[in-house]
Image (cartoon, rainbow, N blue to C red; front, side, top):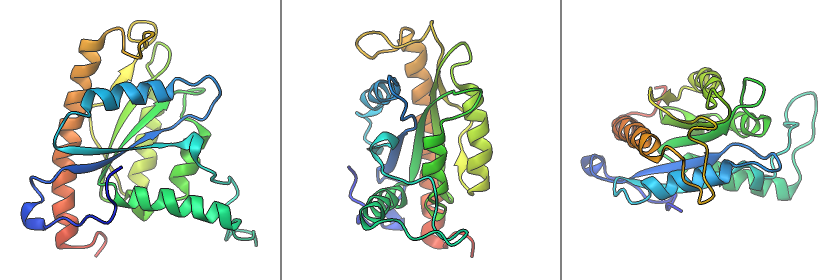
Length: 211
């Protein structure tokens, strides 16, 4: 996991590795999200320009009902600790990769819940997508997520990775069946958000976003 306390000198920001949170967005039983995330992190993990931190929504104890509305009480102390932990990891990230399936032409509720519990953590940072599912490869979920992240002042990169069943479905070893195509797409997407991530890191260091 990248060190959330690490500070980066703006003068050397161009060369420092980008801290990337890879978010596994499905909590459904029988999900393949962890396998997709494992393939992606294994494929790009050797790059020296990124540091990866995998956040799985299935491991988070985020309540659906949020405090502060209609007199709801604050979350229990254990839940507050869980929220603080994931919040600090998202805040430390300088870019995000969202691994998402497509459920009913959209993205999972557990993923939306994680997104909605946070706001400033997403701002002025790039977001890439690795999607999977059916003939569409999860692309309809990605298009809806682009709208959500735009509202949160994040910058979604143009290229994404999509695993279309059955042609690029994962094999028994967790590798896409059309590995060369998916690996090429992953490289292109990472190259894009590294460029944006470094540019936005430098911009945030010079002036806080929103000033």
